[in-house]
Amino acid sequence: MSSCKYVFVTGGVSSSLGKGIISASLAKLLQARGLRVTIQKMDPYINVDPGTLNPYEHGECYVTDDGAETDLDLGHYERFLNTPTSQANNVTTGRIYLDVITKEREGVFLGKTVQVIPHITDEIKRRIQMLGNTGNYDIVITEIGGTVGDIESLPYVESVRQLKWELGSTNCIVIHLTLIPYLKAAKELKTKPTQHSVKDLLEEGVQPDILVCRTEHHLNIELRRKVAQFCNVTINAVVESIDAESIYDVPLLMLKENLDRTVLSKLKMRAGDEPNLDSWKEFLGKLKNPTSEVKIGLIGKYVELADAYKSIRESFIHSGAVNECNVEVVSLHSEHITPENVHHTLSELNGILVAPGFGARGIEGKIIAIKYARENNIPFFGICLGMQCAAVEFARNVLGIADAHSTEMNAETPNPVISMMEDQKKIVMKGGTMRLGAYACAVKKGSKAFAAYQTTNISERHRHRYEFNNNYYQAFEENGFVPTGMNPESQLVEIIELKKHPWFVGVQYHPELKSTVDNPHPLFVKFVSAAMEDKKRREQNAPFAAENKSAVYSQ
Ligand code: GLN
Image (cartoon, rainbow, N blue to C red; front, top):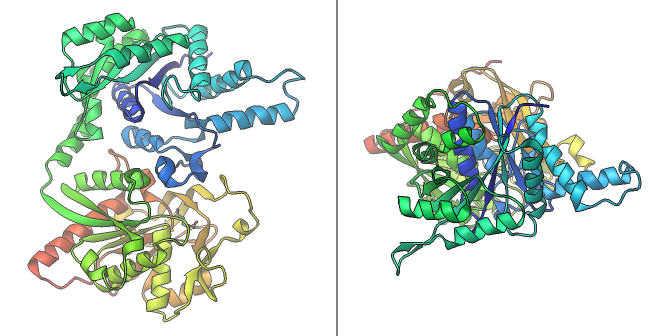
């Protein structure tokens, strides 16, 4: 048996209390103490993965190196821990049922009645221990999605109950995240919802070991004692989680509350030296004391929901901090951008990012915005669909191919500058069938991308079906729209750049998925510094420096 220990994080009272951030913060503290930690998320919905969900439902779909389409909380785990997650780090109820039903069809259960208990709970437990049994981790933190008391989360809580009994209370602990609301009229913090939520958990057979209490005001000792007494936990196990200015403050707040020490003592593990959070603190210092500011437009069609572009927004936080620059991200709905209003809408921006996406809605607005960025020398960053739109724009407005399009938007276009990959054409199923996960890319020396990465061999994550059509390669290149990154095996175009532009880069992959606090993504870092240059140039009224006009690109 592996010696890995398990920490479960459940939620009560209300959704959106931030279980993902608490899990990631605890993991960060344990990692900073030298422990090997990973985080897993159990999602109680029936979709097999979030890949088929509209971003309006659960925010962005995060993609791992091994091509899993996952919940956006995995992005937080990676951004905090700077270690990659995988397929095993996100499991949904749909995935559990699919596996159990597939086994049933294969006759694995030998004629037995297949039931929630034990078959579904056994599969949940197997999935939880899969990470622990690799031998790669000292502690696995498993976040149980949803709120205790929901019908959907019952099998998960039951699995936690069983594991606690099987592995023992020093190998398996439960942190319950609750809310202590403040009643303004009474000027009081109220503990009753927390007490009831713990009762719900007890009814399902689980006594939490630690309570993390979300609150808008500090919890005094009397209140902590009251919560401890009525919820059967030690006083040091009542942890305050006060609203923070930034999610990146939470590890330090949890350190102050000794959450990591309490966890280690309950697991009977030696705490050792204080966690080393030097680089984290340095990042926070820069984040909070910017010396400059830029405005960057984020153009997409899901902008109403901030979570839809979570990783892009976080990447701007990381890359802004390195540059000691406050990046104000201005969300712009692509459907609202027209040739008439484009100048008014974009002229004040120091950079324009056109976001990933699917389908035709809002596509012409993106193309209009790209034309504006190209003609007015505004730094431009196109990600996935954003890069594809840049190719369509260039084909139409520079190469003079008026009917150029992506076959995603117009299957009949005579000039498919973006078209479907051959092996995608036969696929009819939607879930998990895109070009997903990490692929290698060879970056050309002399390019903006090379200046950012400082290497010719990179690996980035993908999630798309359509590609730059290499039949048009030469025409684009000859006119200054240069492919500067290629997949070394398939020769698919991964990066494009404009020669005569201060900073115009489009990528077929998703750099935002690999930006972390410790490792801000180099393209975002360079994009932000290009935006800072743009601001300076405007302030000095200087013409843009076409430093790449005569650039030579080499393999
Ligand atoms: N819809 C495009 C494709 O499938 C782009 C996808 C994306 O932006 N993630 O190729």
